[in-house]
Each structure stands twice: as structure tokens, then as C-alpha cells.
Length: 379
Length: 77
Image: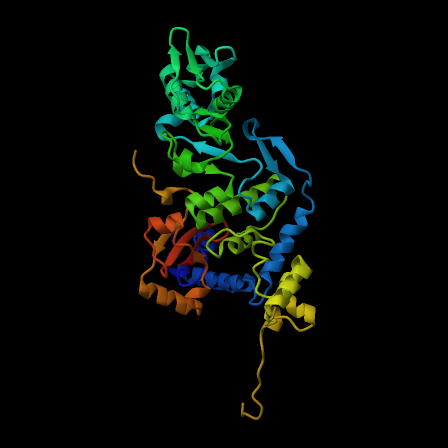
């Protein structure tokens, strides 16, 4: 930056500095003049800062709440990116604020490492390793009641597409059922002999076999490969960040999920804060609503300030208020008052809500300062 | 395969443990004590990775959509 020496004297945010600098450079202003301009900019900047005592939280709540009324109320799914269902609109916003551990439509965007991203075959190979493959995807399973056997007839074409070998399938089944199996490589058949002569065992073994994940990650039900610019990207239905990040060929630094709780567990609180901002912003933007970033950032800060994710609501930000009256005013009035009475709690009336309830001035804006005048002192 | 460094992830901003003197300076400017800062758990994956202990203060350099770069502090609990 050409005018950095002048700008650095003022406590501007980085972005403001850059903006002023580029404007000054455009007109090629002289240093003496620039100094005056920057001074005027600083005055304007100070005037635009938020006032001390401003109820930023209430402003944020209303700024998100009002456009929220215009969002689609019903659970609205759409075939967006590569035909994957994603919850949108108000239900999704509520999901974000509630910090659901299992969102209704988890989804991942997986970027691939350099040597995999350009090659469709290699991308397909990674996708195969991630997508959950069940025995029914690659074989036909028949139960033979007379001989108490389960016969697995493997499909060569399906196996080739999934890039899995006969040996691997056999090993997986043996490990999963903890039983040895008979094999017939010529006919591509695996036979499981049930030792106990009971139909119940036969059926339960069949169920176990059907639910067994032969290959891939259990949570990931479907993978779609898409080419964006000159890079292949995988989109998945279902999410398991921890396992996917460790996969070979995956560029974990650019792999993300829409499950915020998972991000918190794997990448920590700051990443979760970023994820909340991203998700809330994209949900609002998708609905064509414009909310200032600062409001969303404040919500994300409130949710993450304790070091762990707190939801906005009864079990989180609102439920942890210290004042009894404030909690009673929010939800479950009788329960809160009763519990407080049993414990003999005291309300110090230090917050906003409780002071409104008892009819006292609140500590907001000009009410936040207390004036003391010295009577009788000279000047 | 090389070990995964969680800090390289695009969602994770830069974290670093601050020295005593730096902490003193920041708390003086903000006119608050340690306990008033936002918290980060000692079990937090990133806190673990940079080897932060309980009582330390972590400086976080966020990329903010409004101000370009912003600095935040968290107390390890």
C-alpha cells in the first residue's frame, strides 16, 4: 500500500485501509493532501461506529427475525447441487440455531488432492472408497432353508464398477460375521453355513449381512462426482468428516460438511463459528434475503463464546441467563419460578428483561450511564 | 501418509498461544480481566494441536467479511 505510513497511524480495520488506499492511488493524491483526507475519513469512521450502550443483540435479533418471516415455512427440499436433497429456508435456519447433532440432510463437499482432482477415473476410485457399499449392491443373496445356507452370488460387473475383488468381499464378510465361509471362486459364490439348526439364526445372520458395509463409510449413502471448472468435486449425501478427512486422495483442507456439530467436534470452536456464519448466510441468501454479516456474526459469537456450541433457546443462550425473571419471561414460566422458589434464589435485577418486568429504567443506551454531580465544588 | 494438520483447514483461522507480556498488554487495552474473555476448551482439537494449557490465552486471527482481518482472544478453560 502506497499510503500505508499515513493509514497505519489510525486504528482503521484492514478492509477500510485498503479501500481508502485504492481510492487515493486512483487519483494519485499528494502526501500532504492525503493526510487531510485520511483525517476526514477517520472522523467519518468514528461517526459510523456503533454507540456504546447500543442494544446490538436486540438489533441483530430483529434484523434476522424480520426477513425470517418471509422465508418458506414448510420443509422445502430442492434438487440443487447435483440432485442432492438439502433442507432450506426456515427449517434449515432453525436447525442451525438449534445446533442439531443430526441435521435432517447432512451433506459434504469433498475436494480432491492435486493428482486426483483432474482425473475422472481417479475421482471415481476415491468416490468408491467413500460411498457405503452393501452386499446387495454387488451381489444377489439367497437363503437356502433346506440346507441352512446363505448363498451370495456376486455380480462381476457391479464389482468391477466398485473396484472390489472377490477376496476382499470374502474377508469383509468373515470379519463382519466372525464366522468362516465357504467359497467358490469359479462361480463367484460365497456360502455361509449356519451351524445351529434354527431359522432365527439364519434370519438374523441374513439381516446382519444385509446391513453390513462392505466398503466405504457407513454414513455416506451416495456420492456424486461433478466437474467444476477444471476440477472434479465429490458431493455426498450423509456426512462423516473425521473419516473422510483421513481418506487417501482427499484434500482435507478444503473438504467441508454442513453438519456444524461435526465441524465443532473435529475442527474446534473457531471453525464452528465460521461454519455457522457460512451456513446461516447461505441459507438467507438462497431465499433472496439480505441480512448484514455483523448480525449473523454476533449470533455466532453468542453461540460459541463459552468454548462449546450453545443453541439459541431453552437449553442454551436463553436458558443459561442468571436472572430468574428473565428465564421465566422466555419459556416455561411456572417451572422456572417454582424451581427458583424451592432453591431460594435471589434475582439481582442486573439485566434488561427483569428490570422491564419490575418497571425500572434499563441499562441500555443513555440509561447505561450514571451521572454524579459534585455540588458546591468550584468549576 | 503425512499427519493431518487441522490448522490447515480453510474453516480454521490462525491460532497462537500468547506470551505473558502480550496478555498483560491486551488486557490493559481492553480494561478487562482474563475471565471476561470468550473461552476455548482445553480439549478443543486446535487448542490441543498448538499445545495450549488451561489458563493460557489464545490469539485468533480471523478473516472477517466486514473488516478484512480481525483479532480475537480466547481463554483456555
